[in-house]
Length: 607
Image (tube, rainbow, N blue to C red; front, top):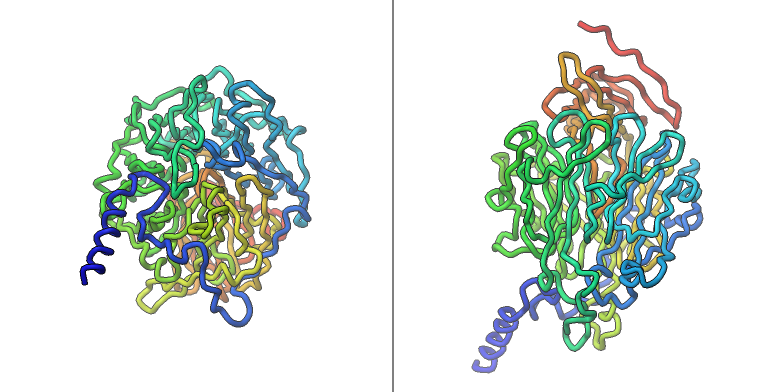
Protein backbone atom coordinates (compact mmCIF):
# COMPACT_ATOMS: atom_id res chain seq x y z
CA UNK A 1 0.00 0.00 0.00
CA UNK A 2 2.82 2.44 0.88
CA UNK A 3 4.46 1.84 -2.55
CA UNK A 4 1.19 2.66 -4.31
CA UNK A 5 0.78 5.84 -2.28
CA UNK A 6 4.35 6.83 -3.06
CA UNK A 7 3.76 6.29 -6.77
CA UNK A 8 0.64 8.45 -6.69
CA UNK A 9 2.52 11.16 -4.77
CA UNK A 10 5.34 11.20 -7.34
CA UNK A 11 2.82 11.51 -10.17
CA UNK A 12 1.09 14.39 -8.38
CA UNK A 13 4.42 16.17 -7.81
CA UNK A 14 5.29 15.74 -11.49
CA UNK A 15 2.05 17.40 -12.49
CA UNK A 16 2.61 20.32 -10.13
CA UNK A 17 6.18 20.86 -11.29
CA UNK A 18 5.40 20.87 -15.02
CA UNK A 19 6.39 24.33 -16.19
CA UNK A 20 3.37 26.53 -17.00
CA UNK A 21 3.44 27.25 -20.69
CA UNK A 22 5.98 24.53 -21.34
CA UNK A 23 5.51 22.29 -24.32
CA UNK A 24 6.07 19.27 -22.08
CA UNK A 25 2.75 18.06 -20.65
CA UNK A 26 2.47 16.72 -17.12
CA UNK A 27 4.13 13.35 -16.64
CA UNK A 28 0.92 11.35 -16.63
CA UNK A 29 -0.68 13.04 -19.68
CA UNK A 30 -0.57 10.38 -22.33
CA UNK A 31 3.10 9.41 -22.24
CA UNK A 32 2.60 5.63 -22.40
CA UNK A 33 1.80 4.82 -26.00
CA UNK A 34 1.62 8.47 -27.00
CA UNK A 35 3.95 7.94 -29.94
CA UNK A 36 2.09 4.93 -31.28
CA UNK A 37 -1.60 4.40 -31.80
CA UNK A 38 -3.53 1.21 -32.16
CA UNK A 39 -4.23 0.29 -35.80
CA UNK A 40 -7.57 1.45 -37.21
CA UNK A 41 -10.49 -0.89 -36.80
CA UNK A 42 -12.46 0.38 -39.78
CA UNK A 43 -13.51 -2.36 -42.19
CA UNK A 44 -14.82 -2.12 -45.72
CA UNK A 45 -14.25 0.75 -48.16
CA UNK A 46 -12.64 3.95 -46.81
CA UNK A 47 -15.14 6.57 -45.63
CA UNK A 48 -13.37 9.24 -47.70
CA UNK A 49 -11.01 9.02 -50.66
CA UNK A 50 -8.34 11.69 -51.10
CA UNK A 51 -5.57 11.66 -53.69
CA UNK A 52 -2.44 13.75 -53.12
CA UNK A 53 -1.86 15.56 -56.44
CA UNK A 54 0.33 18.60 -55.71
CA UNK A 55 3.28 17.71 -57.91
CA UNK A 56 1.09 16.20 -60.63
CA UNK A 57 -0.97 19.40 -60.72
CA UNK A 58 2.08 21.66 -61.10
CA UNK A 59 2.61 22.64 -57.45
CA UNK A 60 6.20 21.75 -56.58
CA UNK A 61 6.99 24.13 -53.72
CA UNK A 62 8.94 23.07 -50.63
CA UNK A 63 8.31 25.46 -47.73
CA UNK A 64 10.94 26.03 -45.06
CA UNK A 65 10.67 27.79 -41.73
CA UNK A 66 13.82 28.86 -39.89
CA UNK A 67 16.58 26.42 -39.09
CA UNK A 68 16.03 22.64 -39.35
CA UNK A 69 16.63 21.96 -35.64
CA UNK A 70 14.02 24.61 -34.64
CA UNK A 71 16.24 26.30 -32.02
CA UNK A 72 13.84 29.27 -31.56
CA UNK A 73 10.10 29.81 -31.55
CA UNK A 74 10.16 31.74 -34.81
CA UNK A 75 11.53 28.60 -36.50
CA UNK A 76 8.52 26.53 -35.47
CA UNK A 77 5.34 28.41 -36.28
CA UNK A 78 5.22 27.66 -40.00
CA UNK A 79 3.21 29.33 -42.71
CA UNK A 80 -0.34 29.70 -43.92
CA UNK A 81 -2.13 29.31 -47.26
CA UNK A 82 -4.59 31.50 -49.14
CA UNK A 83 -7.01 30.07 -51.66
CA UNK A 84 -8.53 32.94 -53.67
CA UNK A 85 -9.45 33.93 -57.21
CA UNK A 86 -6.89 36.67 -57.83
CA UNK A 87 -7.65 37.08 -61.56
CA UNK A 88 -11.45 36.76 -61.35
CA UNK A 89 -11.68 33.97 -63.89
CA UNK A 90 -13.95 31.88 -61.64
CA UNK A 91 -11.25 29.40 -60.57
CA UNK A 92 -9.59 29.29 -57.17
CA UNK A 93 -5.88 30.09 -57.27
CA UNK A 94 -3.57 29.49 -54.31
CA UNK A 95 -0.83 31.49 -52.55
CA UNK A 96 1.72 29.83 -50.25
CA UNK A 97 3.79 31.88 -47.82
CA UNK A 98 7.39 30.77 -47.33
CA UNK A 99 9.94 31.30 -44.59
CA UNK A 100 13.47 32.53 -44.00
CA UNK A 101 16.21 32.34 -41.36
CA UNK A 102 17.27 34.54 -38.49
CA UNK A 103 20.57 35.29 -40.25
CA UNK A 104 18.72 36.48 -43.36
CA UNK A 105 16.35 38.62 -41.26
CA UNK A 106 19.44 40.19 -39.66
CA UNK A 107 20.87 40.88 -43.12
CA UNK A 108 23.78 38.48 -42.72
CA UNK A 109 22.80 36.22 -45.63
CA UNK A 110 20.43 36.19 -48.56
CA UNK A 111 17.04 34.50 -48.25
CA UNK A 112 16.66 32.15 -51.19
CA UNK A 113 13.23 30.92 -50.09
CA UNK A 114 10.31 32.38 -51.97
CA UNK A 115 6.52 32.38 -51.67
CA UNK A 116 4.50 31.09 -54.59
CA UNK A 117 1.29 32.09 -56.32
CA UNK A 118 -0.13 29.33 -58.49
CA UNK A 119 -2.77 30.21 -61.06
CA UNK A 120 -5.52 27.67 -61.52
CA UNK A 121 -5.63 26.69 -65.20
CA UNK A 122 -8.63 24.42 -64.82
CA UNK A 123 -8.77 20.67 -65.02
CA UNK A 124 -6.78 20.34 -61.81
CA UNK A 125 -3.67 22.05 -63.26
CA UNK A 126 -1.71 25.00 -61.88
CA UNK A 127 1.04 27.30 -63.17
CA UNK A 128 3.56 29.28 -61.11
CA UNK A 129 2.87 32.98 -61.81
CA UNK A 130 4.63 34.44 -58.75
CA UNK A 131 7.17 36.56 -60.60
CA UNK A 132 4.73 37.64 -63.31
CA UNK A 133 2.23 38.72 -60.64
CA UNK A 134 4.83 40.77 -58.75
CA UNK A 135 4.80 38.65 -55.59
CA UNK A 136 8.39 37.32 -55.64
CA UNK A 137 9.39 38.54 -52.17
CA UNK A 138 12.36 37.50 -50.02
CA UNK A 139 10.51 38.29 -46.76
CA UNK A 140 9.86 35.72 -44.05
CA UNK A 141 6.17 35.21 -44.79
CA UNK A 142 3.75 33.81 -42.26
CA UNK A 143 0.01 34.39 -42.66
CA UNK A 144 -1.70 35.72 -45.81
CA UNK A 145 -4.98 37.63 -45.61
CA UNK A 146 -7.17 38.29 -48.64
CA UNK A 147 -9.74 41.01 -49.27
CA UNK A 148 -10.88 43.70 -51.69
CA UNK A 149 -9.51 46.71 -49.81
CA UNK A 150 -10.75 49.32 -52.33
CA UNK A 151 -14.01 47.67 -53.45
CA UNK A 152 -12.89 47.61 -57.07
CA UNK A 153 -13.78 43.95 -57.61
CA UNK A 154 -10.21 42.63 -57.38
CA UNK A 155 -8.87 40.74 -54.37
CA UNK A 156 -5.84 42.25 -52.66
CA UNK A 157 -3.29 40.42 -50.51
CA UNK A 158 -1.73 41.22 -47.13
CA UNK A 159 1.10 39.01 -45.88
CA UNK A 160 1.91 39.01 -42.16
CA UNK A 161 5.60 38.31 -41.70
CA UNK A 162 8.49 37.80 -39.34
CA UNK A 163 9.79 41.25 -40.09
CA UNK A 164 8.04 44.02 -42.06
CA UNK A 165 4.65 43.00 -43.43
CA UNK A 166 3.51 43.33 -47.04
CA UNK A 167 0.37 44.79 -48.64
CA UNK A 168 -0.17 43.97 -52.31
CA UNK A 169 -2.84 45.90 -54.19
CA UNK A 170 -4.33 43.98 -57.11
CA UNK A 171 -4.04 45.98 -60.36
CA UNK A 172 -6.79 44.03 -62.11
CA UNK A 173 -4.46 42.83 -64.87
CA UNK A 174 -3.00 39.81 -63.09
CA UNK A 175 -0.34 41.82 -61.25
CA UNK A 176 0.09 43.31 -57.76
CA UNK A 177 1.92 46.37 -56.44
CA UNK A 178 3.38 46.38 -52.91
CA UNK A 179 2.22 49.41 -50.90
CA UNK A 180 3.07 48.75 -47.24
CA UNK A 181 6.65 50.06 -47.28
CA UNK A 182 7.01 53.07 -44.99
CA UNK A 183 3.38 52.89 -43.82
CA UNK A 184 1.92 51.74 -40.49
CA UNK A 185 0.63 48.45 -41.93
CA UNK A 186 4.23 47.32 -42.53
CA UNK A 187 4.25 46.75 -38.72
CA UNK A 188 7.77 45.22 -38.51
CA UNK A 189 7.55 42.64 -35.74
CA UNK A 190 6.87 38.94 -35.32
CA UNK A 191 3.30 39.06 -36.64
CA UNK A 192 1.94 35.63 -37.61
CA UNK A 193 -1.57 36.42 -38.81
CA UNK A 194 -4.06 38.97 -40.06
CA UNK A 195 -7.73 39.25 -40.94
CA UNK A 196 -9.80 41.64 -43.02
CA UNK A 197 -13.31 42.65 -42.01
CA UNK A 198 -15.58 45.69 -41.70
CA UNK A 199 -15.37 46.61 -38.01
CA UNK A 200 -17.15 49.97 -38.32
CA UNK A 201 -19.77 48.90 -40.90
CA UNK A 202 -18.84 51.68 -43.32
CA UNK A 203 -18.62 49.36 -46.32
CA UNK A 204 -14.87 48.85 -46.56
CA UNK A 205 -12.46 46.29 -45.10
CA UNK A 206 -10.39 47.12 -42.04
CA UNK A 207 -7.39 45.07 -40.94
CA UNK A 208 -6.41 43.37 -37.66
CA UNK A 209 -2.85 42.02 -37.30
CA UNK A 210 -1.84 39.61 -34.53
CA UNK A 211 1.60 39.91 -32.91
CA UNK A 212 3.39 36.97 -31.30
CA UNK A 213 6.37 38.14 -29.28
CA UNK A 214 8.87 40.94 -28.83
CA UNK A 215 12.10 40.13 -30.64
CA UNK A 216 15.38 42.03 -30.48
CA UNK A 217 17.34 41.38 -33.68
CA UNK A 218 20.52 42.67 -32.06
CA UNK A 219 20.15 40.32 -29.09
CA UNK A 220 17.90 37.43 -30.19
CA UNK A 221 16.69 34.74 -27.76
CA UNK A 222 19.28 32.05 -27.15
CA UNK A 223 19.07 28.94 -29.28
CA UNK A 224 18.03 25.65 -27.66
CA UNK A 225 17.44 27.46 -24.39
CA UNK A 226 15.61 24.67 -22.58
CA UNK A 227 15.79 20.97 -21.89
CA UNK A 228 12.92 18.48 -22.09
CA UNK A 229 13.83 14.95 -20.94
CA UNK A 230 17.52 15.68 -21.74
CA UNK A 231 16.64 16.95 -25.22
CA UNK A 232 17.84 20.44 -26.16
CA UNK A 233 14.80 22.34 -27.45
CA UNK A 234 13.74 25.95 -27.92
CA UNK A 235 12.47 28.26 -25.24
CA UNK A 236 8.71 28.10 -24.65
CA UNK A 237 6.24 30.93 -25.45
CA UNK A 238 6.06 32.04 -21.83
CA UNK A 239 9.83 32.48 -21.78
CA UNK A 240 9.26 35.50 -24.04
CA UNK A 241 7.42 38.77 -23.63
CA UNK A 242 4.30 38.89 -25.77
CA UNK A 243 3.64 41.71 -28.21
CA UNK A 244 0.64 43.96 -28.84
CA UNK A 245 -1.65 43.36 -31.82
CA UNK A 246 -2.66 46.26 -34.03
CA UNK A 247 -5.88 47.37 -35.72
CA UNK A 248 -5.90 49.48 -38.89
CA UNK A 249 -8.95 51.34 -40.20
CA UNK A 250 -9.55 51.74 -43.94
CA UNK A 251 -10.16 55.20 -45.39
CA UNK A 252 -12.38 53.71 -48.09
CA UNK A 253 -9.71 53.77 -50.75
CA UNK A 254 -7.44 51.06 -49.38
CA UNK A 255 -5.20 53.26 -47.24
CA UNK A 256 -4.92 52.24 -43.58
CA UNK A 257 -4.31 54.16 -40.35
CA UNK A 258 -3.57 52.72 -36.91
CA UNK A 259 -6.81 52.95 -34.91
CA UNK A 260 -6.04 50.39 -32.21
CA UNK A 261 -6.71 52.68 -29.26
CA UNK A 262 -9.54 54.65 -30.89
CA UNK A 263 -11.61 51.51 -31.54
CA UNK A 264 -11.07 50.13 -28.02
CA UNK A 265 -8.54 47.42 -28.83
CA UNK A 266 -5.94 46.97 -26.12
CA UNK A 267 -2.89 48.95 -27.28
CA UNK A 268 -0.46 47.31 -24.85
CA UNK A 269 -1.79 43.75 -24.55
CA UNK A 270 1.06 41.26 -24.41
CA UNK A 271 -0.46 38.00 -25.59
CA UNK A 272 1.13 35.62 -28.09
CA UNK A 273 -1.29 36.08 -30.99
CA UNK A 274 -1.88 33.64 -33.80
CA UNK A 275 -5.13 33.33 -35.80
CA UNK A 276 -7.80 36.05 -35.70
CA UNK A 277 -11.44 35.78 -36.72
CA UNK A 278 -13.84 38.65 -37.50
CA UNK A 279 -17.62 38.10 -37.58
CA UNK A 280 -20.75 38.71 -35.52
CA UNK A 281 -20.37 36.19 -32.71
CA UNK A 282 -23.05 37.48 -30.33
CA UNK A 283 -25.98 37.73 -32.75
CA UNK A 284 -26.52 41.50 -32.43
CA UNK A 285 -25.54 42.23 -36.06
CA UNK A 286 -22.35 44.00 -34.99
CA UNK A 287 -18.91 42.65 -35.94
CA UNK A 288 -16.80 41.07 -33.20
CA UNK A 289 -13.23 39.79 -33.19
CA UNK A 290 -11.71 36.66 -31.61
CA UNK A 291 -7.95 36.01 -31.36
CA UNK A 292 -6.44 32.59 -30.59
CA UNK A 293 -3.38 33.14 -28.39
CA UNK A 294 -0.52 30.81 -27.55
CA UNK A 295 -0.10 30.15 -23.80
CA UNK A 296 -1.83 33.42 -22.96
CA UNK A 297 -5.58 34.08 -22.64
CA UNK A 298 -7.55 34.39 -25.87
CA UNK A 299 -9.07 37.74 -26.73
CA UNK A 300 -12.71 38.42 -27.62
CA UNK A 301 -13.53 41.96 -28.66
CA UNK A 302 -17.30 42.42 -28.66
CA UNK A 303 -18.69 45.49 -30.41
CA UNK A 304 -20.56 48.00 -28.26
CA UNK A 305 -21.41 49.97 -31.40
CA UNK A 306 -19.85 50.22 -34.86
CA UNK A 307 -16.30 51.41 -34.31
CA UNK A 308 -16.03 50.66 -30.58
CA UNK A 309 -15.23 47.32 -28.91
CA UNK A 310 -14.67 45.92 -25.43
CA UNK A 311 -12.60 42.87 -24.48
CA UNK A 312 -14.83 40.26 -22.75
CA UNK A 313 -13.28 36.84 -23.44
CA UNK A 314 -13.06 35.86 -19.79
CA UNK A 315 -16.68 36.58 -18.92
CA UNK A 316 -17.78 34.76 -22.10
CA UNK A 317 -15.82 31.60 -21.16
CA UNK A 318 -13.52 31.59 -24.20
CA UNK A 319 -10.34 33.10 -22.74
CA UNK A 320 -8.92 30.01 -21.03
CA UNK A 321 -9.72 26.34 -20.45
CA UNK A 322 -12.67 25.27 -18.24
CA UNK A 323 -10.22 24.88 -15.34
CA UNK A 324 -8.87 28.39 -15.82
CA UNK A 325 -5.61 27.58 -17.58
CA UNK A 326 -4.29 29.39 -20.64
CA UNK A 327 -3.89 27.01 -23.55
CA UNK A 328 -1.65 27.00 -26.60
CA UNK A 329 -4.31 28.06 -29.08
CA UNK A 330 -3.36 28.09 -32.76
CA UNK A 331 -6.14 27.62 -35.33
CA UNK A 332 -9.87 28.40 -35.50
CA UNK A 333 -12.79 26.85 -37.41
CA UNK A 334 -16.42 28.03 -37.38
CA UNK A 335 -19.62 26.00 -37.55
CA UNK A 336 -23.14 26.05 -36.12
CA UNK A 337 -22.95 22.87 -34.05
CA UNK A 338 -26.27 23.34 -32.23
CA UNK A 339 -28.33 24.97 -35.01
CA UNK A 340 -28.98 28.24 -33.18
CA UNK A 341 -27.67 30.54 -35.97
CA UNK A 342 -24.74 31.56 -33.76
CA UNK A 343 -21.11 30.67 -34.50
CA UNK A 344 -19.38 27.91 -32.57
CA UNK A 345 -15.59 27.61 -32.60
CA UNK A 346 -13.15 24.72 -32.81
CA UNK A 347 -9.80 25.95 -31.50
CA UNK A 348 -6.69 23.78 -31.86
CA UNK A 349 -4.27 23.41 -28.96
CA UNK A 350 -1.00 21.83 -27.87
CA UNK A 351 -0.05 18.30 -26.89
CA UNK A 352 -1.09 17.44 -23.34
CA UNK A 353 -4.21 19.59 -23.80
CA UNK A 354 -7.30 18.86 -25.81
CA UNK A 355 -8.63 21.04 -28.58
CA UNK A 356 -11.55 23.26 -27.58
CA UNK A 357 -15.06 23.20 -29.05
CA UNK A 358 -16.75 26.39 -27.89
CA UNK A 359 -20.51 26.02 -28.40
CA UNK A 360 -22.70 29.10 -28.06
CA UNK A 361 -25.20 29.06 -25.21
CA UNK A 362 -27.37 31.75 -26.79
CA UNK A 363 -26.73 34.28 -24.01
CA UNK A 364 -23.39 35.66 -25.14
CA UNK A 365 -21.37 32.89 -23.54
CA UNK A 366 -19.83 29.66 -24.82
CA UNK A 367 -19.24 26.22 -23.30
CA UNK A 368 -16.34 23.94 -24.22
CA UNK A 369 -17.94 20.69 -25.41
CA UNK A 370 -14.84 19.03 -26.81
CA UNK A 371 -15.83 15.80 -25.07
CA UNK A 372 -18.19 15.00 -27.96
CA UNK A 373 -15.11 14.89 -30.22
CA UNK A 374 -12.82 13.29 -27.64
CA UNK A 375 -15.08 10.24 -27.48
CA UNK A 376 -14.13 9.62 -31.11
CA UNK A 377 -10.38 10.14 -30.65
CA UNK A 378 -8.40 12.15 -28.15
CA UNK A 379 -6.60 15.22 -29.47
CA UNK A 380 -4.44 15.23 -26.32
CA UNK A 381 -1.49 13.48 -27.99
CA UNK A 382 -1.45 15.89 -30.96
CA UNK A 383 -0.33 19.47 -31.55
CA UNK A 384 -3.14 20.99 -33.60
CA UNK A 385 -2.78 23.80 -36.16
CA UNK A 386 -4.97 24.21 -39.25
CA UNK A 387 -8.62 23.26 -38.83
CA UNK A 388 -11.79 23.43 -40.91
CA UNK A 389 -15.41 22.33 -40.90
CA UNK A 390 -16.42 21.14 -44.36
CA UNK A 391 -18.95 18.73 -45.87
CA UNK A 392 -16.49 16.52 -47.73
CA UNK A 393 -18.99 14.02 -49.14
CA UNK A 394 -21.97 16.36 -49.76
CA UNK A 395 -24.24 14.34 -47.47
CA UNK A 396 -25.53 17.36 -45.57
CA UNK A 397 -23.29 16.99 -42.49
CA UNK A 398 -19.98 18.79 -42.03
CA UNK A 399 -16.77 16.98 -41.17
CA UNK A 400 -14.01 18.51 -39.06
CA UNK A 401 -10.41 18.24 -40.32
CA UNK A 402 -7.45 19.08 -38.05
CA UNK A 403 -3.82 18.97 -39.20
CA UNK A 404 -1.13 18.32 -36.60
CA UNK A 405 2.61 18.41 -35.97
CA UNK A 406 4.93 18.95 -33.03
CA UNK A 407 7.43 21.80 -32.80
CA UNK A 408 10.54 19.91 -31.67
CA UNK A 409 12.10 17.60 -34.30
CA UNK A 410 14.38 16.18 -31.58
CA UNK A 411 11.46 14.04 -30.43
CA UNK A 412 11.96 11.73 -33.42
CA UNK A 413 15.47 10.85 -32.16
CA UNK A 414 14.45 9.99 -28.61
CA UNK A 415 14.81 6.35 -27.54
CA UNK A 416 12.38 5.15 -26.45
CA UNK A 417 10.19 7.58 -28.36
CA UNK A 418 7.60 9.24 -26.11
CA UNK A 419 6.03 11.79 -28.43
CA UNK A 420 5.94 12.21 -32.20
CA UNK A 421 7.25 15.24 -34.07
CA UNK A 422 5.60 14.08 -37.29
CA UNK A 423 1.90 13.56 -36.62
CA UNK A 424 -1.12 12.44 -38.59
CA UNK A 425 -4.24 14.59 -39.02
CA UNK A 426 -7.60 14.04 -37.39
CA UNK A 427 -10.77 13.77 -39.49
CA UNK A 428 -14.05 13.70 -37.58
CA UNK A 429 -17.26 12.72 -39.34
CA UNK A 430 -20.69 13.01 -37.78
CA UNK A 431 -24.09 11.39 -37.88
CA UNK A 432 -27.10 13.17 -36.46
CA UNK A 433 -29.01 11.61 -33.61
CA UNK A 434 -32.78 11.93 -33.36
CA UNK A 435 -32.43 14.74 -30.81
CA UNK A 436 -30.34 16.76 -33.29
CA UNK A 437 -26.99 16.23 -31.56
CA UNK A 438 -24.03 14.76 -33.44
CA UNK A 439 -22.21 11.49 -32.88
CA UNK A 440 -18.60 11.87 -34.06
CA UNK A 441 -16.19 9.25 -35.43
CA UNK A 442 -12.51 9.85 -36.20
CA UNK A 443 -11.57 8.22 -39.52
CA UNK A 444 -8.33 9.75 -40.85
CA UNK A 445 -6.36 6.51 -40.48
CA UNK A 446 -8.76 4.82 -42.88
CA UNK A 447 -8.22 7.43 -45.58
CA UNK A 448 -4.99 6.31 -47.25
CA UNK A 449 -2.23 8.87 -47.67
CA UNK A 450 -4.12 11.41 -45.58
CA UNK A 451 -3.01 9.43 -42.52
CA UNK A 452 0.71 9.90 -43.22
CA UNK A 453 2.71 11.69 -40.54
CA UNK A 454 3.97 15.22 -41.18
CA UNK A 455 4.61 18.40 -39.24
CA UNK A 456 1.69 20.34 -40.68
CA UNK A 457 0.65 23.95 -40.10
CA UNK A 458 -1.53 25.73 -42.70
CA UNK A 459 -4.76 24.28 -44.14
CA UNK A 460 -6.93 25.79 -46.87
CA UNK A 461 -10.18 24.20 -48.04
CA UNK A 462 -11.39 25.02 -51.56
CA UNK A 463 -12.92 23.28 -54.57
CA UNK A 464 -9.70 23.49 -56.57
CA UNK A 465 -10.91 21.35 -59.48
CA UNK A 466 -14.43 22.82 -59.71
CA UNK A 467 -16.19 19.46 -59.50
CA UNK A 468 -18.54 20.40 -56.67
CA UNK A 469 -16.76 18.78 -53.73
CA UNK A 470 -14.17 20.31 -51.43
CA UNK A 471 -10.44 19.69 -51.73
CA UNK A 472 -7.70 21.00 -49.44
CA UNK A 473 -4.08 22.11 -49.40
CA UNK A 474 -1.68 21.60 -46.47
CA UNK A 475 1.54 23.47 -45.73
CA UNK A 476 4.10 21.46 -43.76
CA UNK A 477 7.16 22.74 -41.93
CA UNK A 478 10.25 22.02 -44.06
CA UNK A 479 8.43 19.90 -46.58
CA UNK A 480 6.55 19.96 -49.88
CA UNK A 481 3.09 21.43 -50.21
CA UNK A 482 0.43 18.75 -50.27
CA UNK A 483 -2.77 19.14 -52.32
CA UNK A 484 -5.49 16.58 -51.69
CA UNK A 485 -8.05 16.08 -54.43
CA UNK A 486 -11.34 14.84 -53.05
CA UNK A 487 -12.26 11.62 -54.88
CA UNK A 488 -14.89 10.52 -52.38
CA UNK A 489 -18.01 9.21 -54.11
CA UNK A 490 -20.56 11.97 -53.64
CA UNK A 491 -23.42 11.10 -51.34
CA UNK A 492 -25.60 13.85 -52.71
CA UNK A 493 -25.95 17.25 -54.33
CA UNK A 494 -24.37 20.56 -53.38
CA UNK A 495 -24.95 24.28 -53.54
CA UNK A 496 -22.35 27.03 -53.32
CA UNK A 497 -23.19 30.66 -52.61
CA UNK A 498 -21.15 33.63 -53.77
CA UNK A 499 -22.03 36.97 -52.20
CA UNK A 500 -21.39 40.44 -53.58
CA UNK A 501 -21.56 43.50 -51.37
CA UNK A 502 -22.35 47.00 -52.54
CA UNK A 503 -24.57 50.05 -51.90
CA UNK A 504 -27.94 49.47 -50.25
CA UNK A 505 -31.17 51.26 -51.07
CA UNK A 506 -31.85 53.81 -48.36
CA UNK A 507 -28.17 54.18 -47.47
CA UNK A 508 -25.28 52.12 -46.30
CA UNK A 509 -22.82 49.87 -48.10
CA UNK A 510 -21.75 46.25 -47.68
CA UNK A 511 -18.06 45.49 -48.24
CA UNK A 512 -17.55 44.03 -51.72
CA UNK A 513 -16.51 40.59 -50.41
CA UNK A 514 -19.47 40.33 -48.05
CA UNK A 515 -17.13 39.35 -45.21
CA UNK A 516 -19.11 38.78 -42.05
CA UNK A 517 -22.31 37.73 -43.81
CA UNK A 518 -24.26 34.72 -42.56
CA UNK A 519 -25.81 32.40 -45.14
CA UNK A 520 -28.66 30.11 -44.11
CA UNK A 521 -30.13 27.43 -46.34
CA UNK A 522 -33.22 25.27 -45.85
CA UNK A 523 -33.64 22.09 -47.86
CA UNK A 524 -35.17 18.69 -47.23
CA UNK A 525 -36.55 19.79 -43.88
CA UNK A 526 -33.11 20.75 -42.56
CA UNK A 527 -31.39 24.06 -41.93
CA UNK A 528 -27.69 24.69 -42.50
CA UNK A 529 -25.67 27.81 -41.68
CA UNK A 530 -22.32 29.09 -42.94
CA UNK A 531 -20.40 32.37 -42.60
CA UNK A 532 -18.43 34.38 -45.17
CA UNK A 533 -15.04 34.88 -43.53
CA UNK A 534 -11.84 36.76 -44.26
CA UNK A 535 -9.59 34.28 -42.42
CA UNK A 536 -9.62 30.98 -40.59
CA UNK A 537 -7.87 27.65 -40.07
CA UNK A 538 -4.32 28.55 -38.97
CA UNK A 539 -3.01 31.77 -40.54
CA UNK A 540 -4.89 30.81 -43.72
CA UNK A 541 -7.77 31.70 -46.01
CA UNK A 542 -10.36 29.24 -47.30
CA UNK A 543 -12.54 29.85 -50.34
CA UNK A 544 -15.02 32.26 -48.66
CA UNK A 545 -17.99 31.03 -50.72
CA UNK A 546 -20.23 28.94 -48.42
CA UNK A 547 -20.54 25.35 -49.63
CA UNK A 548 -23.52 23.21 -48.64
CA UNK A 549 -23.86 19.46 -49.07
CA UNK A 550 -27.49 18.48 -49.64
CA UNK A 551 -27.56 14.70 -49.65
CA UNK A 552 -30.34 13.38 -51.86
CA UNK A 553 -32.30 16.64 -51.72
CA UNK A 554 -32.74 18.00 -55.26
CA UNK A 555 -34.21 21.40 -54.49
CA UNK A 556 -33.42 24.16 -51.99
CA UNK A 557 -36.47 25.59 -50.27
CA UNK A 558 -35.00 28.95 -49.27
CA UNK A 559 -31.78 30.91 -48.96
CA UNK A 560 -31.18 33.84 -46.61
CA UNK A 561 -28.11 36.08 -46.61
CA UNK A 562 -27.87 38.26 -43.53
CA UNK A 563 -25.38 41.02 -44.22
CA UNK A 564 -23.16 42.74 -41.63
CA UNK A 565 -25.41 45.23 -39.88
CA UNK A 566 -28.55 43.10 -40.12
CA UNK A 567 -30.03 43.67 -43.60
CA UNK A 568 -31.23 40.48 -45.27
CA UNK A 569 -31.63 39.05 -48.74
CA UNK A 570 -34.34 36.37 -48.74
CA UNK A 571 -34.57 34.15 -51.79
CA UNK A 572 -37.53 31.82 -51.99
CA UNK A 573 -37.28 28.41 -53.58
CA UNK A 574 -37.44 26.07 -55.13
CA UNK A 575 -33.82 26.72 -56.14
CA UNK A 576 -31.76 24.39 -58.34
CA UNK A 577 -28.71 22.53 -56.98
CA UNK A 578 -25.24 21.48 -58.15
CA UNK A 579 -24.20 25.04 -58.97
CA UNK A 580 -23.07 28.37 -57.53
CA UNK A 581 -25.71 31.01 -56.89
CA UNK A 582 -24.56 34.64 -56.81
CA UNK A 583 -26.40 36.94 -54.38
CA UNK A 584 -25.89 40.70 -54.48
CA UNK A 585 -26.62 43.02 -51.57
CA UNK A 586 -29.82 44.97 -52.05
CA UNK A 587 -30.70 43.09 -55.24
CA UNK A 588 -30.93 39.36 -54.54
CA UNK A 589 -30.11 36.50 -56.88
CA UNK A 590 -28.24 37.87 -59.91
CA UNK A 591 -26.42 34.91 -61.48
CA UNK A 592 -25.74 31.21 -61.40
CA UNK A 593 -22.56 29.35 -62.34
CA UNK A 594 -22.86 25.82 -63.69
CA UNK A 595 -19.80 23.86 -64.85
CA UNK A 596 -17.80 27.09 -64.95
CA UNK A 597 -20.33 28.95 -67.12
CA UNK A 598 -21.94 32.04 -65.62
CA UNK A 599 -25.50 32.97 -66.54
CA UNK A 600 -26.97 36.28 -65.46
CA UNK A 601 -30.41 36.24 -63.86
CA UNK A 602 -32.67 39.25 -64.12
CA UNK A 603 -33.60 40.42 -60.62
CA UNK A 604 -37.30 40.41 -59.74
CA UNK A 605 -39.14 43.69 -60.27
CA UNK A 606 -39.01 46.04 -57.30
CA UNK A 607 -42.10 46.24 -55.16
